[in-house]
Amino acid sequence: MDAATKSLSIEDALKKGGIGALSVNVIGLVAGFLLQVFLARILSPDVYGSYQYVISWLSVLVIIAMWGMDGVNFRLVSAYVATREFALLRGLLERSMNLTSLAGLGIAAILSLCGYYFPFLFPPGIGALMVIGALSLPLWALSNVRQVCIASLRFPMKARVPDLVVRPIVIWLCVLALSVSSIALTAKTLLLIHALAFVVTLGLFIFLCERMLPQEVHSAPAQYRMSYWVNMGNSLMGISLVYIIMNQLDILLLGYLRTTADVALYSVSLRVAQFVVFGLQAVNIVAVPSMSALYTEGKMEELQKLVSLAAKYHVFLGIPVFIIILVAGQFVLSIFGDNYQEGWLILWLLGAGQLTSTILGPAAYMLSMSGHQNRVLKLLVVSLLINVCLNIPLVLLYGALGAALATSIALIISNTMMAFNVYSILKIDSTVGAFLSRIFYSRKHSE
Image: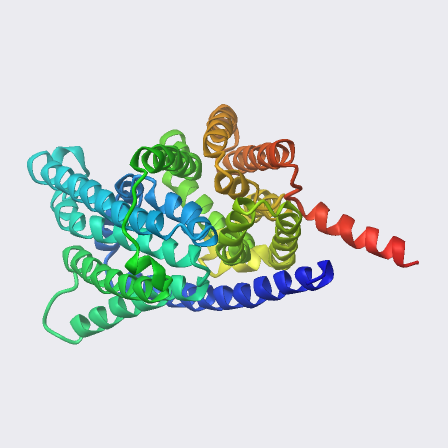
């Protein structure tokens, strides 16, 4: 197979998988959005707010419960398949589920005890909800670990369907059943439904993973590298935790230093701005496992082509959304209510920050997938410090607008540092510039 044919096959595979993953993302986004609209309309603000508060806590704790095993699976499953190390793959799958189960149950137990015996640690009425919410914590963590395993096996659509489509449908059916019955829909019943949905999701993920695995895995005797996997998991968990702090820092500071009205205005603008990287998520779930396999096999030229193609699709999918934000941002915000139209400049700034993620490419993924997760963690800590130093004075001076400016500047600096380190360490250009230079080079030599 010549270089041109290889490049074409890589692009066709990325395009096919990316379209499939993007389609599933769209369906999941619509289903999830309609569900939240429905819940917000039939529940009182207090009940809906309590439910969302517990879910927010669980979304943070689930990262600790996974202990980085989601990232370890994403990094190593495709690599072990590429090198046909099926014994290690079987060992990794077993131990990652065991460790996640233990961590998830332990954290759920601690959360339940705190909610039951120390309810004063939470807002009024939330302690009892935490006890119920803890039921879904290990299920959520195990589902995520199996999901990334399927994605790393290069089945992006199957990896997204249970979480983005099946789970909202299960919640929809349960909520509709309760709404026509005499059972009141409360935050407690919603959290029980949430746990039930994860039972279904986890079962489906386990079933799909068993079917997607190479047959050699089932017959291979398990081998283990626990210290290696745990050390990698620790670093990846640290990365995830720093990411969460970075993503929540602006909102937390706004709530602490300004008013809840600033928080609402900023949150709505941020929700819209995140659509800029919607396509990026779909492309990455297809491309990253292949990047890991190519790096493991030492195929650096093909790796550069794949990274360039991924960056191209990031930009092609992100720029149209950003243009819509620039042209019709105020109208989009008005859908949430007339009070949010004034956030158009906040939306512009946040959208510009998100756009740099598409332009500079999957740099952080590249470093993590190539075994440089400790470097990623250090860069994220630096970015977090920059974020804090910018956010505090700008939030005090300009409120939500200052938070948007500080967050976007910090994001641009973070993405730039990641891209620079990818090039200096791996000699890979992760930015869209690599794709553009290839086009310019091809045209120049064709003349």
